[in-house]
Structures are given as structure tokens and as C-alpha cells.
Image (cartoon, rainbow over all chains, first blue to last red; front, side):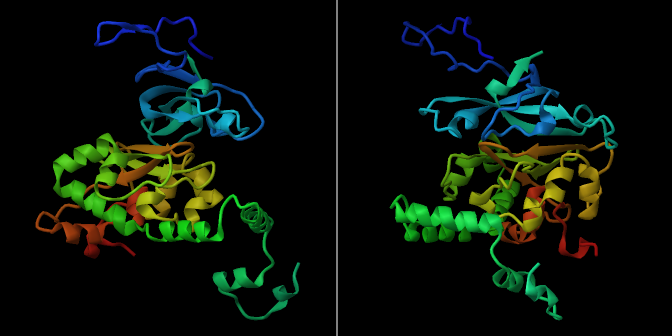
Length: 118
Length: 215
């Protein structure tokens, strides 16, 4: 999942056009509806199974960018960083039989490659 | 099983550990550590030094941060905007790449922190996590039935207060900024800090006045 076709060039305050690298700009912003992907890669990654396939809302972009744990686990990172988001998922979305308040929720940081827009 | 299982007397947890043969993961840790030292990638002194770093981090640091946030609105705003830089201004260094998000409890929101995958914890400000924080019952139940978990810690959260469980999984660590108890208007910053406990900064309890503690 990436936003390759998006034009990320912008006029800098120096008055000159600056083209940003793929992935430099975050794909999502606060308020966006997202779904956590369902996939089962081999190796080290930081997305618990209980949130996969669940729908939530991006609460904030986490700064600064971070290393992709999934790539790092194989030593493939080469120092490239990406965006993490703090995602809000209602407890009732995670657990259909949740008995607490309907307002209760989870907050979890998820790397951009694990999110799709809904 | 091992022969010492038949000993008639009780062992304390720590005595047991030294008597029992090392576990699978203890053996793996020793093997990896010895290999790293043998290959000269790290030294024994560096390991000892890191233990010293962790030993110097205790909940007393976090308590001072919380008390300062209670008495200094400007600091509180900085802390909520960027927990890490606010703590660094206090002289609390972060020895890793983790960020710190400080979660403020209010009349409407109660925050609780957990690491379902392992034991991520705001170590730079609180030191090592308690054993129950690393154990599977807390890790699995905090995200599934937080109200029951809180009740078991003696914490009743009204239905109209939203519970937010923050699962710390990758690069962010969390610290709960508890509510300042009513009746502490005349307390000094130092007296306030003395009220703030580790568990309150994890979010499993509220900060209480000493005479409010229920048994």
C-alpha cells in the first residue's frame, strides 16, 4: 500500500519547487478512517493479531518517522524510515461481546504499510 | 521434574530462581551474551553499565514529572505536546529511539497502558516494569476487559468515563498523567510527588490521599 501517484511537490518558502521522495509525506492524517490489514508475514513485526482486520480512526501522526520493524528484523532497512500513526479502535469493534462502555477504546501505533483507507 | 521439588519447605521466589536450573530463555540469553562478548561486539562492562542506567530510573522520576505538571501549567502543556523533550528538559535522558506520549486523565477519560506483545514500558522515566505488567494475564486482559482489570486493582471507573487503553507496541512509550487529588491545593510540589505511585502512572489506580487508600 503506497501513494506512488500522488504529486508531493511543493513550493518551498525560498520560492523554488521541491519534489518530495516517495513516502516522505504521510499517507494518512488525523480523522482518516482506516482498516488494519490482515497479513501474516514471517519474522519480527509489531502488529498484534487482535487488531488485524479491524477498523479505526487515525488520531495523530507520530513524529518523528520510525524504522519499519518488519524490514529491520531482516536487516533490510538501510536506514529508511516511514510513518507511524496513533490509531483509535473502539473496544466494541475489537470484541463484539464487549461489556464495558461503548465509548471505551484502544489506542495503538501502527506502521503505514499495515493500514488501508476505508 | 527436579529433585528439589520434594523439599518440604517453601522457597521464596528469588531463592527458587537461584536453585532452579536456568530456563530455555535464560540459557539463550547467556549464550547470546557470551557470544557477543567473545566476538568483541560488546563488552561485559557495557552490559553492567546498561544495568546501572536502568537501576537509576525509578518511579520517583516519573512522580516528579507528574507533580511538576500539576503545579506548572506551562510545563504540563509541554509535557502533553511532547513527553520526551519535556522530560529531557528535566535532565531525564532517553537512551533509545523511543518517543514518549503522556496521556492525561480527566473527569471524562481514564487512560491505561499495556504492551500486549511484550513488555514495552516508559523505562527512561519509570525504570523496570513490575512483573504483573509483563505477565500474560495483564497483557491480554487489559485490552479485552479493562474495567474488570481495573476493578481488581480496586479502581472503579464510572460508565460515563471513557477508558482508553494504549497498547505500546513499537516506538512509542506511554506515561499516564493522573488527576491531582482534591484536597491537595496547599501541598508543595514535593508533597505532591510523594503521592504519585508507579501504578497510578500506568493507569491501574488513581492518585489518592494517604487517608483515602482503601484496603
